[in-house]
Image (cartoon, rainbow, N blue to C red; front, side, top):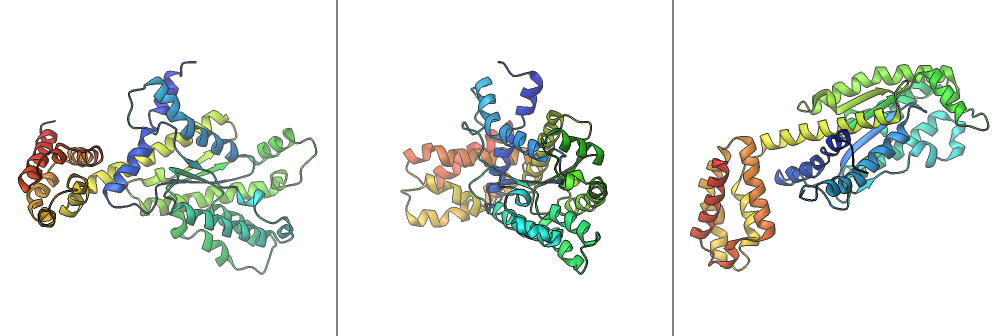
Length: 356
């Protein structure tokens, strides 16, 4: 079935993830490849469904878009590699810790910190989606600190909501739902009545308040850390009256806004250096005499000055051309490589971009 125009428009945002990875390479930020999205929120608010929709969009979306337009070169043909670690509260935290809700949520928070640290150094996956990160654990610990589980320092909760952890994820998505609706959703999907958090209307009402209150602080801190992204770095969705499709589209659109803002910032900050160009030209010069290679940074200084005078969009285009030729090979490989031939090739690229 042919995809709708609305879906094609949404799929058109997919190349942004690959573009973000490329501009990070250009600016030397290669500690991780993965874009990190951290989910938080109330039970029955729709986190699991939203995460699955997001995962499916990034893994299968590129293949669908390529089937629609086979000429595209800006997408991974097999889809993006997405990692969704198991959610800590229901799948990892030992059940016997439920005797102490404070300890239970502290353990879940420690697990979330581990997953966040791994995501921050993930050089294999393209996207990591965390179901309940450290910030979420802090919200639950705030509840249990004030709900009768006495004798615990609020500093434990504060640890999980340190700005250091908040700013390790590129996007936070917080889902809330009306407490009465949460109870109804729980009732509809259970043959036997469940006595978990989502069935406790008083607890859910308090968590609804905590999430909404803490979200303002989360958004403020992330905006300070990434002013070029601003408030888009955190998204709050009340799913009470919304369909799962609507929630998924909002999350996808939010991820695209953050990626676009980060790409624009990288492009505006990027500047050529002799060392950056010399590193890319290394594949041009496999058989060049060592004395010429040593002189490359010296005779690139004029090109660097001229390249950095270009507007940011053209500067980015020039960087892309240099990257492409370094990968695909160049006429330089077939010529006798001298200072003059290198200068000539680079000057042609500069003129080509300047006139475009």
